[in-house]
Picture (cartoon, protein in one colour):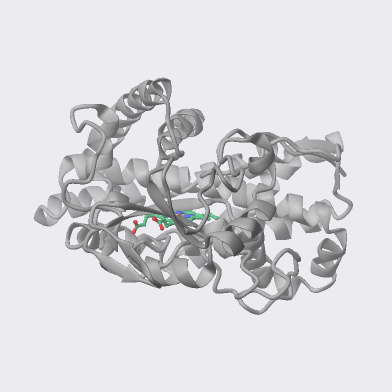
Length: 398
Ligand code: HEM
């Protein structure tokens, strides 16, 4: 019998684990790469090969008949019910095809100059100070502004996006409290009312933005209900910045801790694409996602029963030595870019092309403008979340 998490001394809530989960993942992968944990009442999977295979197995999914769900009469429950991320085909296919068009690599590539201008503006504001908090001054505002502009959220509404989003995504952590649920419900109510206002405006006067495009899809052929329209806008706005904030900050921290890699990138800027993929592998922003067992599965001698839940540890898979030689080494010249940072299978991140452009631009502009970037303190503090894992702050001097 593989050992359970408690026997292995693994506590997902501990600050030490959150600060550096990777040594723990090594133990887990060696001792119990696939195991049913009695305390958590779910399976945990930590090898690259297994996560990658299971993500593509259509007998598993993000939704299944009879899956326990948040009460659909609450604002968060209604959002959950209408979110494409929580659906399986055919609903998933219908909703995803509508947003897919907005994020093709070609469309997103056209946004590069705009993203670059935003990054420059943010650095203009801090450059004279000689210091900044990477999170508050750069990594947070950049993706928030980009996704707000893409959807068409005006300047005055943008300050709310991050607090609303953070209250909502707290529900995707491993054990949200009743207080988390209360805050999430309040955030969804306010966010939905705000978006409903924007949607009504776009119905009267469409613009060149994603909200107008989705409104048009709703009006065209009943392909999108009003509740789905609101849920899709909220999903885009939240998913469109939460992980990117941490991906940018994690990447900058990795460069600051490996100055030789920062120097290498300065000397060889053509490595930018591979550097971004390495950041996503090395310090994966979204550490875990679940799948439901929709139909029984016999896999590697284990029996997944219908209705069970499987937690896939993307961060562990990305540090698996069986897939990535010297997995704990941050190496921007690494050629294997098939990491699990954006997931795999039908729920593969729809925003991956945009996230890539944002990260590439963020690192490029930072490198050009602040070549002598240094950490202000040797220790850094993480927020208490494990699933959406990221830094509280990242003070730097330059
Ligand atoms: C570095 C930044 C990002 C990372 C690491 C990331 C990661 C992920 C991952 C791992 C998934 C799959 C979840 C699963 O397996 O269940 C996912 C799904 C998704 N992401 Fe991202 N994401 C990022 C940026 C974005 C952006 C910029 C957008 C939107 C503009 C976005 C929108 C979505 C959506 C809508 C889904 C759900 C797709 C579906 O269920 O079919 N993400 N993302």
